[in-house]
Image (cartoon, rainbow, N blue to C red):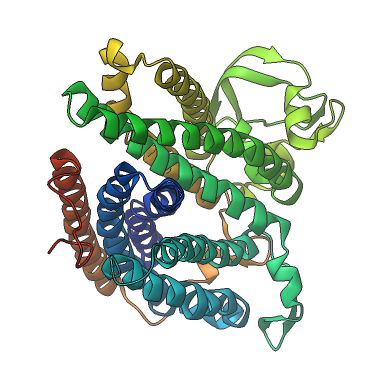
Amino acid sequence: MDVLTLSRLQFAVTSMFHFIFVPLTLGLSVLVAAMETRYVVTGNEMYKRMTKFWGKLFLINFALGVVTGITLEFQFGMNWAEYSRYVGDIFGAPLAIEATVAFFLESVFIGVWAFGWNKVGKKMHAASIWIVALATNLSGLWILLANGWMQHPVGYVLRNGRAEMVDFMALITNPFGLLKFGHQIVSGYTVGAFFVMGVSAWHLLRGRNRDFFKASFGMGAVFALASTLMVAVIGDFHAVDVAKTQPAKFAAMESIWDSCRNAPMHLIAFPDEKNQCNLVSAFPVPGMLSLLAYHDLNAEVRGLNSFPKADRPPVLPVFLSFRAMVGLGTLFIVLAAVSIFFHRRNLLEKYPWFLRAMVLCIPLPYIANQLGWVVSEVGRQPWIVYGLMRTSDAVSKSIDLSQVIGSLLGFTLLYGLLGFVDIYLLAKFARKGPEETSIGATGAFGK
């Protein structure tokens, strides 16, 4: 282990821990806002109780997500000083906007929402949670535009040994960043939807607050189907953009070694990186890979052998992560559709096996999100800024091995504790149900 490897490991650990919280925040913010809107429109007190119950779980997750996200930006200065020096003028701009605009809106209006019950009007209170949801999505936009620039750098010139921005509009209209944002946001919505359905299923299995949790399950199911279908559609366009801008990553995703036209997609494959081929390639679908990559059956798809070995990403983790992510995404669409069918025909409680399955499915969208980031970030290697700066050139020169080991151990222990706290609190209050977690008139956490 050297400083570079440990610095990469540290950033992976901290960012993946942080991303336990982010997708649920994205999904729950929209669902809670929709629940409160239904309360304001209909006057039905059940939707108010739903808003308060799911809103409390949202607040717990949001608070811990903020804490775990703070350290990520410090690492750019501590572990990746050469990267910050080289591209800081570009990369820092969207992060600064995220902090001063999106996070400011989140912080202000989440306070209004949490402590404003019976202190502001119903419409203003509902508007405040919609602003929180909007700001949460805006926060993701600026962060993913920054990451999108690392994946496909645009709007810059090399001057005085550094990359300097010359076209801010190119950065914020970068197709790679916008597609990445769209794909990630709806993936977060999927996490929130399956969380609501899973918790609701747990209570329905025990016969608790049946009308309350049937309504929650129904809202979650509709949101889940819309989100999972959007994940598939945006994911297809994102894959096309990856094939165009990062062909080595796309080749690793599909484990294709030799360039060819009318490229087939093998339903069963397994890469052998050492021998630069596949150990298994079975059940080819002719032209399907060309169609997926370029929406053209006769398009040429570049294979890994067309790139120097030094420019290829690690194939096995990218390939396996991509296949698992796509498989889970397909499963989510099926589960969401079946959930709507059972809910609308009042069949949920007649099939307890399905409710148990939905409880067990709560962690699966989290796993799919993490796999997506493995594809994105491992697939970009060996570049930290694709085609512009190698990861090996970006690490700080002033830190030693002992410092990285110490901070890595510290972050791992601290984040592990925070992850445990988050899961414990979410499980504790989710099990209690709406009566025990009523927010009351004075604020989000009771009287």
